[in-house]
Length: 387
Image (cartoon, rainbow, N blue to C red; front, top):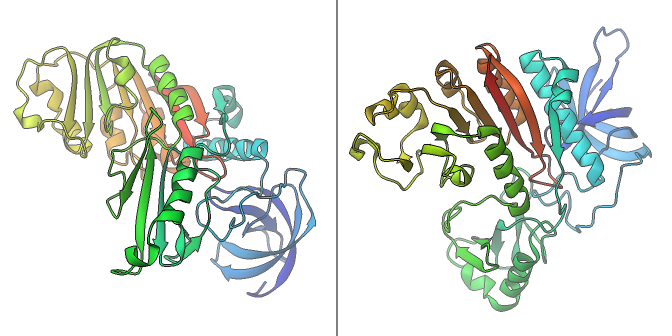
């Protein structure tokens, strides 16, 4: 097998990424070689051109479809695959959900060694209400010729007249921007500019031009599925005296629990709340937003300085894409009776989960929430209970 070779390939599944996965068995080799190819679907046979050898796998370019999958669909977006926004529009929506389910189970099984059938028995899948028109927050880039998204692995802008995954109100803002704003003037200083639109719950669309990401405050991009996520967390958290909401931001996941817990501490290095050093003990019942690195908060056991000597009833975590890392061990050591892990990356979730499954915790429930249809991204909630 050499770069530039053209081969026929059976496609097995989707990867956690834009590519589908197939395997080929070279003559004389004991192990099959994995081949990643973008634009293919599971259960189809394709002609592909090998483009890059990574020793343990190959990348390939789709040349043609020999036997198409029944789940292949015509992407409705005219810039699909040129734009870096969506990756899976060529898959029917049921096939997207099935692929994400398979990816999640595969990642969790490989890291934790919990049997796949056991994981599936505890899994609930929440498909999106609206596979298109769901995004209530959108950032795009522009130049003197138009606006759109960066091409994959590039700062080259793919111009578009609208975005099909954006909420209709944001699509209208996109059209108005193209019709009424002086693109050449906006791009004059640096050649490019950026816009972010955020749709508020009351239907207002806010525009942030050349400002930092989430300038109008961080919000989940899919409000409908965010409500599903909040309810799941509330159901699993139950109630008690103290809840730690780690990487909690503005309290999106736990605001609904203020009547269920005497105290909720939402900790995040980006919080605009009081400096934790200024908090006086004993803490009055209610909720507190703490601006501090979660790792420092945990290692210093800051809550004890505020009069919490008893056990923590529940811990909710919603870390960035790279996961909990060393914080996972600190959280497991606290031995809270309930821990809820929220993650947007199944690979880092699987890694972090091993700190709990090796420390008296049992997986109680798994929820896959399709927060990002037409992309490979997914949101997961894992509920853990102490044995």
